[in-house]
Image 1 (cartoon, rainbow, N blue to C red):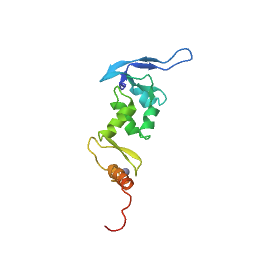
Image 2: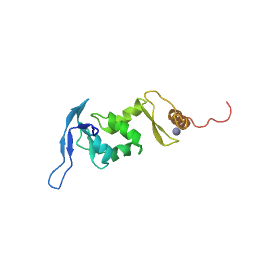
Image 3: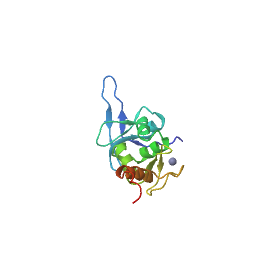
Image 4: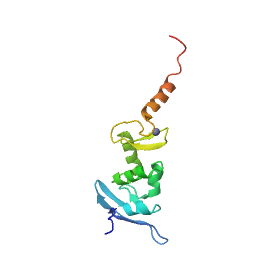
Amino acid sequence: MSEQYLKVGSYTPETETQEAVIDRAYYRQGWICKDEEAFLFYPDRVCYVPELSDGGYTRQDFLDMCNGQEDIAALLFDMVDWQHPETLLNELYDTYELDFCPVCQKIYCMMGEQIPCPVCGTNPEEVENADTESERRPAEPGGI
Ligand SMILES: [Zn+2]
């Protein structure tokens, strides 16, 4: 038996004689197109169309916004259900699902609780705070 891939609605790419045809279907929260097979095997094919825009996204688009990390791109593709992937990605950062390690230059999963980078132990929050602290407060003149 062949594996079943998630397929929501359909997206027919434009041709010389016809514009792209977007046939949305309802999925979790909104009307979208989502094509898991295209995401997994056809990097240049549109695999996702959000509810409020006709701009299609390819696997490459997901990879580009996920620092080229396939695991994060797959996570984002799996979770997105009506919004723009960029919007969801920002939400994931805001809710501590994901963070970016400035040392490893990698995105990592936190699952709702802020944790340091599992690879090198850097806490991006501390790094950011250290930066803003020094910007805000110039070095104090010696002594009190
Ligand atoms: Zn790190």
